[in-house]
Image 1 (cartoon, rainbow, N blue to C red):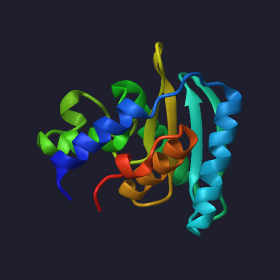
Image 2: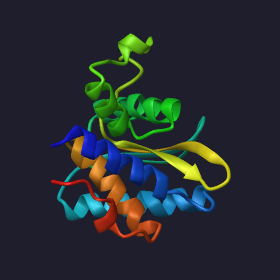
Image 3: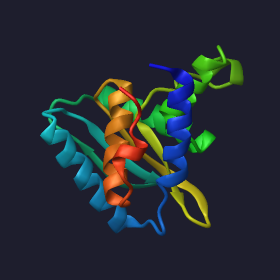
Image 4: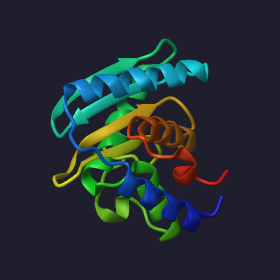
Amino acid sequence: MNIEQDLAGIAEQEARLRFDRFDAQTAWELGQKLMRAAETLHSAIAIDISLFGQPLFFYAMRGTTPDNADWIRRKRNVAQRFHRSSYGVGLMLKHKQSSLEERGLDTRDYAAHGGSFPIFVKGVGCIGAITISGLPQREDHELLVEVLAEYLNQPLAELALDP
């Protein structure tokens, strides 16, 4: 894995995976798509879609634990604070040889690990985050991007990170 290439790829994902509008129906549809995608992989994930302060969708698949909900909370906090994907923030910190703690953030409340993607609405900005937990962090991020790309009619081949 080349961190600089991944950071550039994630920046492109964040720039292109944006919504014209986002509401509870959108959250429901995305949550269902994430659930089906995880089932196809025979994986168990927990899914959270929240606007700042307002949960719109939450589902914990069989095989997840309360730890998944806590990981979701901590990863969502990173995406909402930085308006970047939690995986991108984690890679950026690694690249700069820095940490959340050095930025004054408590790791009990923040986790810069893959699995949370900011919800951007065109002309508005970041309004929340879509977060999953249950797979290794890069796979959490990739699953989110795959589902978002399909939902937003963006070509995944142009957005996928190099293996």
